[in-house]
Image 1 (cartoon, rainbow, N blue to C red):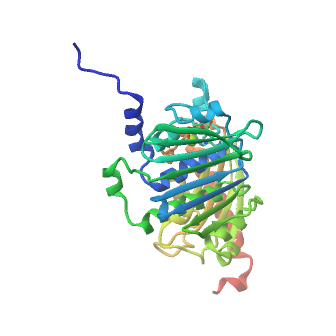
Image 2: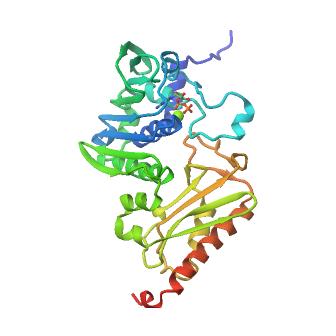
Length: 338
Ligand code: ADP
Ligand code: MG
């Protein structure tokens, strides 16, 4: 008899969890992205001990009916794509249908949800297994709590860094998501203290102020440009506002925060010689284009992306920013001295 066996779903979920759920901030990212995909206008995240004790995400999105709520924890369960062509035209942040199954397999989950039409439902899961399911009074939306993350994967638990480091990763994701979606009101609370709050009024500069401070927000200049295939816009700091690393540069492609070396380089190069050596700007760049031009299916965390027509996009970004900086620093001569 052959030795090869098809692994059961529970085991394969736990293996996938190794890729999708690296640390508490990965859970924050996946849950908040689900809330965004559900059309929420308000999303609140509560962390205890940087998420090691618990991570709670509350949204006012579409919610789920009972059938969907139960299905959502199965592997490859997604409401977002159904046919192969969908994979090349992804407009949602999620599409792999892996996150909830993976997260549930390495934690204890409580989910409350209602689609606003049916009764609310509360589900308890432990290590990927359904423990309890009961009706509950709940408004439209979803509230999900992940407790004791990695309690059944000691190796992963051991690899986690200090509370401060883990919290830093979650703050970073929340900042980027808040910048990506200024029309959503975000709140991040850690051990009872608010760390980030945005008003959801759609004003990027107000979000920049909430994250980088009012003084810096005032020194951000807008830019925008368009080519055949791409539209770019955003804000970049005046050359006098600089940072020691590139972490203050955020690039969003169709609403998704991405890391893209060449686009980042185009932003920095746009400053030409105006930036001191080894100093970098604060920048928020939104790129919009047909989803057909972007391939997000490179890695489970979807932070890397492949872009078509780079030779069109890179100069578009660089020129738009360069022009905005030039006109901002050349006009008011008096301000230049400082
Ligand atoms: P994906 O986001 O890739 O579809 P997930 O495992 O993250 O996969 O979620 C599975 C499904 O559960 C989603 O496709 C969606 O239908 C549903 N879901 C998850 N979170 C929410 C939420 N906050 N509100 C409404 N539906 C949700
Ligand atoms: Mg998802």
